[in-house]
Image 1 (cartoon, rainbow, N blue to C red):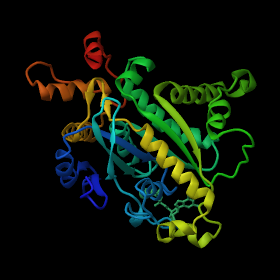
Image 2: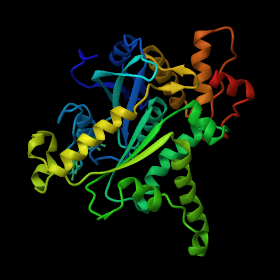
Image 3: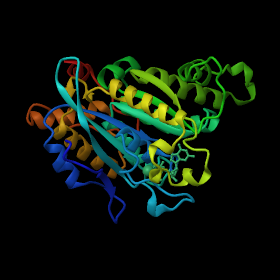
Image 4: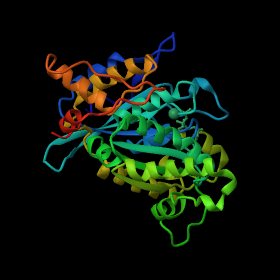
Length: 345
Ligand SMILES: Nc1nc2c(ncn2[C@@H]2O[C@H](COP(=O)(O)OP(=O)(O)OP(=O)(O)O)[C@@H](O)[C@H]2O)c(=O)[nH]1
Ligand SMILES: [Mg+2]
C-alpha cells in the first residue's frame, strides 16, 4: 500500500446531496486481499482532525487542513482515506494494513451520515475535541454513542463488543487543566465518566439520566478506551492557524511527545476490523461501504446484524433471506438466535 502516496476520497456527496463511494478508493481497496485495521478520526468541525490524521501518518500535511476563520471551501467533505505504509502482524501471525480515515465534522449538515459510515468501518475510533470534558463534550459525543447503540440493535453490550470490537480514544486538544498526579485515563474514568447522582440534581432528572446513559455507553460498548491530552502545539497564535506549514521540530516538545505516544498506542491497539466472525478485507470493506451508503441515502441506519447478513448473503447468495434494515425512527430489528450464533461462528 506504500504506492498510495496521498489521501484518497472514500465517500462524497453528489450534487443531489446523496452520499457516494469514490470509485478510485474502491479500486485501491479491492486490491487489498488481506485484513485491514481501520482508524477513524471523528468529532465536531474545525478542531484539528485532519491535522492529527496527518500526524498519525507521520506527516504534517496530506489530508487537507482547513483555515480559520471558518471557510467551508477548506473543510473536509465526506470521508478520506490513506493507508499507512507499514503493515502490522496480528496475534495469529497474519499481516494486515492500517487504514486511516479522516472525516467531515460530525456537526456539519451531512456529518452524521459520514460519521455513521466511519463508525461502521472502524476498529479504532478517535473522538477529537478541544479542551476538557464538560457538558458540551457529552452533548457532542452522544451522537456517537447513539449511533453505536443503533448499530447494536437489540443485542446486549457484551454481545456487541464481541461481534463488533471497536476501541475508543478520547483525544483532548489544547488541554489546559492541571491533572496533578491523575493520568488522562484516570481523569476520563474516575472523573468524566463517573455517573452523576440523580439526588444531586433533583430538578433535572431527565438530563442526568441522559448524561449517565452516554457515560455508560462509552464504558460498555467499546472493547477498550483511552484518553489522551494534547497541549497547544505552539504558543504562537500565527503558527496555530497554519500548523500544516509548520515543521514538526518547531512545535512544542509536549505536543511532539504526545503525538509520538498517540501513534504508538494507535498502532498497537488497532486490530484487524471484524464483524462477527468475518474479518474485513479490502473487497469486504468496499461491499460494506456500498451497502451502508445505500441504506443511509434511504434514510436508514443498518444494524451490525443487517450488515453481517448482507456480507454473508453476497458470499452465499441463495442461502440467506434478504437483510432487514433498522430505520432511524423505528426500533432496530432484533438479532435472533440464528443471527447471534452466526455472528460468533
Ligand atoms: N489551537 C490549535 N489549532 C489547531 C490544532 N490542530 C490544528 N489546528 C488548526 O485548526 C485549523 C483546522 O484544522 P483541521 O485539521 O483542518 O481541522 P478539522 O477538524 O479537520 O476541520 P474540518 O475538516 O473542517 O472539520 C487549522 O487552522 C489548524 O492549523 C491544535 O491542536 N490546536
Ligand atoms: Mg478536516
